[in-house]
Image (cartoon, rainbow, N blue to C red; front, side):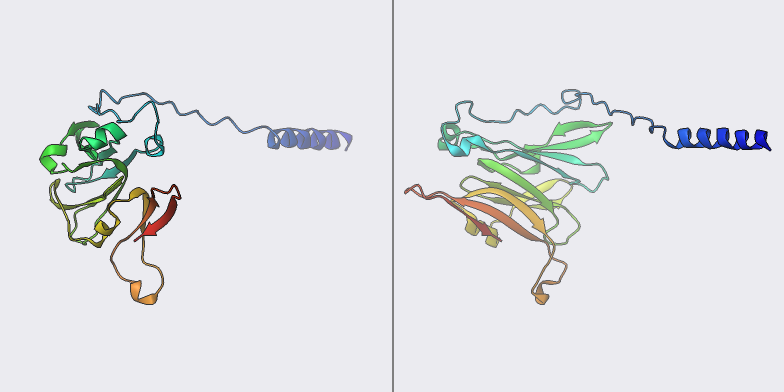
Length: 210
């Protein structure tokens, strides 16, 4: 009987020590910089001096399947500087199409994404529900809505009410699903744009434009 008690005590200690053993450490993910190998060569435009508040923030990135191939393409927001903006600005975005095997090609010009300005943020959505993802870019001075005509060919849609946000600073945006009121429960995508209005008197303020 004593040997049985000793056996059970030893078995309990073994189970207790097993239950208290720390779990194995999760493997640490490792990353490799494949930017150049992937063909992504664009440099973000900015000013190192940061003389103006608008030069202290810009840039962004988005993913789009512009030809419904099942492979994600990359949109880079280019930025600019005050000096470059006074001379006409820079192309607001660069579109990299995924060719395969994680290699990308710059198709910005052939895609028709040629509007110049000072890009700040980008959003991807199918705003007209035609099955092709469209692009909306906010920027300093103007915002741009590009409609996807199919197979990565875009045109600027100038009749959008979003153009009313021009001559302000569209610094960020979000894509919203319909909310209240009840009449808004439909299949159309809505955008919420955060706008910084810069006045000459120095009393800058933030507002929203939808």
